[in-house]
Every structure is written in C-alpha cells, then in structure tokens.
Length: 116
Length: 112
Image 1: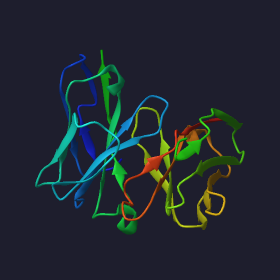
Image 2 (image 1 turned 45 degrees about the vertical axis):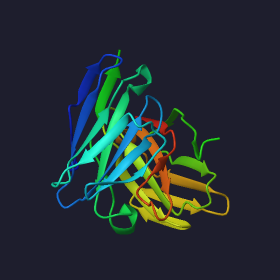
Image 3 (image 1 turned 90 degrees about the vertical axis):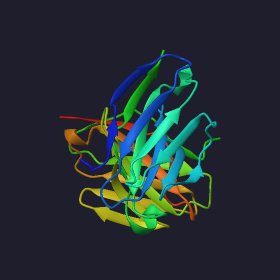
Image 4 (image 1 turned 180 degrees about the vertical axis):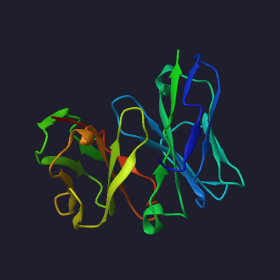
C-alpha cells in the first residue's frame, strides 16, 4: 500500500451537480497529479499541482479545476457533471518536478464517480 | 491515432508460462517508459521504469525499450495466478516527465 489516500472511495452524483474529490499525498511529496480512468481505458492526465501552483494540464475543460494546500494535499473539483465524467479518478504523488528524474510517483486507490 | 497503443487482451496463459506484453507509440520525444500493474478496484502500482533504450530486469520481470521501432515490452517469467491483473504501459517526455501518457492496458489472466 502507498501512502496516498483518496476520499471518498465511491460517489454517486446527478448530472449537472458539482463534486469535490480529495487526495492526501505521501509524506515528503510536494507534487500531486490527477488522472481520469474510464472503464476499460488507461488513465488520462487531467492536471498537476506543484507547490500549490498548477503545473501542466491535459485536454480537459475548465470545469475541471483543482487546488493544492500548504500540506500538499489536493482537491479535484468538477462542475456541471456530465454522464461521461463517470470514471475512476486517481491521484499520484511524487517528489519534485519531473518525478522520474528523481523518484517514482505513487498512486492512490482512486475515487469511483458515477454520474446518473 | 492514439499516442500509445496497447492490445487490451484479455490474455489468458497457464501458470509457469512466459508472458509478453507490448506497446507501440508515435511520439519520438518519449524518453521515460514505465509499466504499471493494476488489480481490480485498485490504483496502478509501478513495476518497472526504464529511461531511453535498453533492457532492465527485476526478478521475474524484464522491460525492453526499442526507441528506433517505438516499441516497448514487458516479459513476465514463470507467471503466477497472482500476476492476474491489468498491465498498463506509460510514457513521458522531458520536461514534463511526470505527465504520464498511458496505454489502454492489457488484461492478463494466469490460470493454475
């Protein structure tokens, strides 16, 4: 088990609602990346936070937003939920920019979001 | 065309078999290559990491990267039922080396 924890583990929301997902990074890690994994697909990079600043974003609309706190934990917020947002949301924590130049990224167990 | 292509399987093999998992990619800027294992309802777990071309071995696992062919492989020797999982390849490029581009994953089942 990694030291990355995500909450909640499961969530059901109605189309049009807003959702907040949380991630506590591993001790000593200052970078959190968020990924969306649809059923039967590989994870897709949403964005990354490094020392409380957004540091790179994938091909996701602005209704996907995030925050990183001084303790390096992070939130992913999704507004105006759509049915296609149903997926496993994963966060990964790492140390420093360019994780694979320094150390590996550890994934949490994910939050399974169902939009109905 | 996806940047990373991976056969989704499923791949079913008997215990003790040698398993070969593969990915192809189109972006020649990729320099960092990873293999993750994902059990059902769990997050991905890093198995192997390779920088640039070459081979890397760790126990029963061997990762190979052929940048000239844009092709990477993961070999599992003496496969065990506990190896049954989805195997994801992932890649990244400098300077965003921790922005990972994943394949779709190959589901592997090892039967006793």
